[in-house]
Image (cartoon, rainbow, N blue to C red; front, side, top):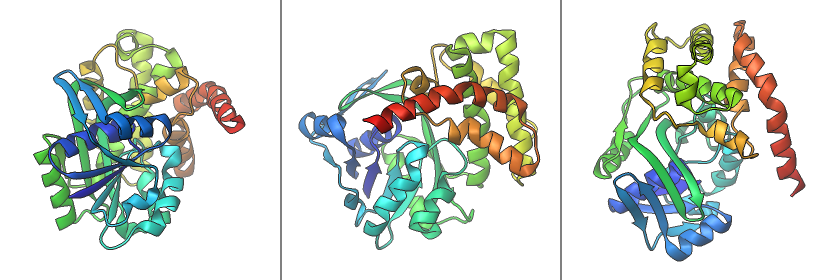
Length: 312
């Protein structure tokens, strides 16, 4: 398959490198020093099983690279989704479709507004991967997976082909019966993981071991459960204990990208995670006091990071 990875950060770079190593025709869309390093020395992904190096790697800053692709894996941050859609939309043609890999529950609908709903396949991923230097990504742990599916819930040839490509690359990939439910299940886990971790400024091992912050994690999950159900998403009762069980399985040094970005003074996905819970809860008439408190506490740091970016 011809696959474009639009946004070659931690997640996009990790899965794109695995696909390229397996022989898929992969083009990375990146920028700045990261792009130049990939062009010059290739893309390196450090994993516990050794390094994956794609050299030479096809890389560009031109959004027009999506023209003629079978699939576009969108690896940008949530706050960049709509802009990425507007920029790439003129180049999309033929049967090209886009799979957003962002954490959150709104990326697919945001993307559909710019590229058209028929060109969007719902998606999400799980990976502890991040850029440590230009052209170099570090992936922690052994669990890296992708889930995707048609927004309509119907099976399709295009998702079957993408599934086969991931299978050839040795990536855990599945097509869930309901991609919307899968997105909310991930949302229920990742938002408390990231927001409570950032609020406490501690890795997950400390957060889950402290009775006070462990209770915050579960309260946050139950708020999201209530919001999802009010919006017609049938999350099961066991969603919260299952997510807490997954929290307990994580590397104790683990942190979410939201927490890392805020700690390092970068714009984060606060609006699409914690802010979205508050906003979607308000729209559905569901109170979300814990998320509202955390959002208010973290928002000044988010605004400072965005102001620094705007002054550059």
